[in-house]
Image (cartoon, rainbow, N blue to C red; front, top):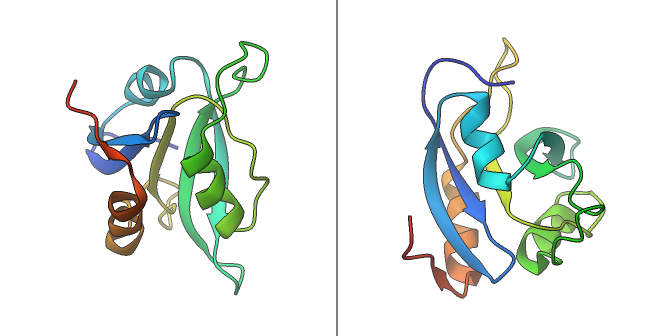
Length: 121
């Protein structure tokens, strides 16, 4: 669920690049994934939500390419490893159900395994 404050997140692209972005409203997430969004919750091994990945809910029908980096992250956090298209990742939900900033350790992981920053913003 989005709110009116900016949330720091990252967009992971199918080509292995990533972009750090600020998300403020639903439209920001939809632009990042190029369609309507579906939430994929990411949990640690204790069952606690650590982050949320947003994907285009019709990405498979649109035949978007496999996003291997986002799929690996999804698998690491207990989900199906088959994510397609661009994926927006932010932090977990707060007590009111709003997104929070992506955890620093997850952003660092993405930066370390990314092929490069996307220089086109």
